[in-house]
Length: 284
Image (tube, rainbow, N blue to C red; front, side):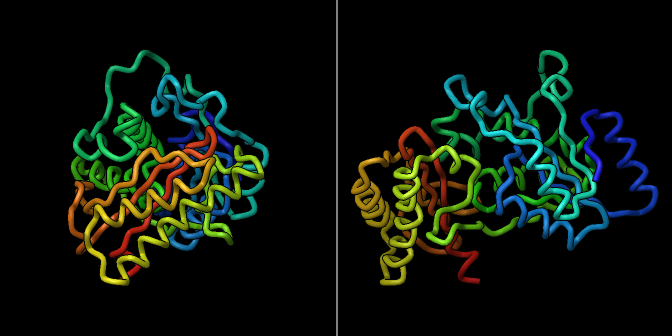
């Protein structure tokens, strides 16, 4: 396995692979890899001749009061995990390599990026789209793998690729959960023991929404209200949002039907966690 920090060197390797007609699978990450990331890598390994993982904590998607400096990092462990999974190359640029000068060009999708997580994180998805488009231009993958836990991000990346005619296939991958239901996230490592127990309330509230829909409830307001009541029973939890939206357009809906996304963001102590349930995906 090779670790590359330089864009020019990265492009030379990719061009050599392309000349050999090798397909390239790409898993963009911010590092501190967990089982969710590894599931993406394994899928990429099965479907491509070469696999690239990027490890880059992107500063442009963090707000001024967010946790960029404290975001967990461990390059040594990440490299060991990638090597074990058969990754061919890690692209691990520094911030100056990705943003060498003041940046004037950005990629943004306002309509999809202003709701849900974007409502309280202005500029977040502009940063995501910009860095992902840069990474696509550098790695030139045939396929790129994204987890469904970041549901809004996935929809936005799919729309960006479609609108800008970027020649890459976006491959969605299922949420990977702990045994108690908590969606795997790098931020889980910041939870105390008591907070880790409390964090189960996110998946429990989503399970409750599934139960309500199985019982025939279609009123989105009723489902949201009961989810919020359940979460508020946990003293360490603070709801940022609970939304029920069309899974394609991310617009709020009043009646649950068709392809529906139930998404939530909850603070457990000082740690912000997200989770979701997409009814259409599991129904099919």
